[in-house]
Length: 153
Image (cartoon, rainbow, N blue to C red; front, side, top):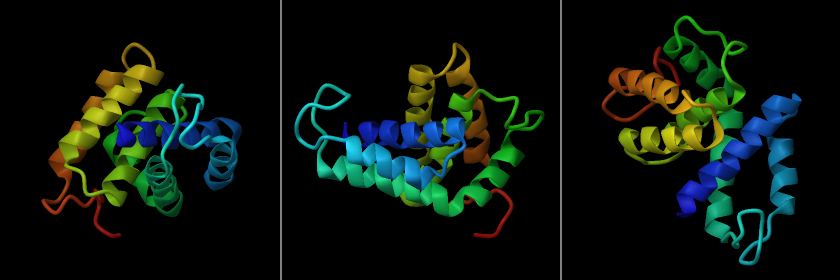
């Protein structure tokens, strides 16, 4: 449950930053300042420190590797530009690639969680789209679980 909620928080930061044209770390700092730990919050229950730290790790990993993540996504989403994609789908995909860099989680789990996020926050076809893109990622990823599609860090 902590990881699911952490992914949702990280997604919220990525989405808000993208939508508003803000720096994702600035958005995260504002979002984090509004969080209530171990009491009521926007989710209807308290967040523990582990959940918040995991969300922060995902956001910071994205911020640190954004260029590489976007290059890798560009390879995966043939026929689409970022401007053509729903912002929800784009940011779910970005978060999934950040998660592959930040956490020791099996690729199938990353895909499943990204599809759930896409279905929860995206449009009717978001889950299917995200699943298709990330399935390509898993087929092309080296066996050590590293994300890069085209070599390099």
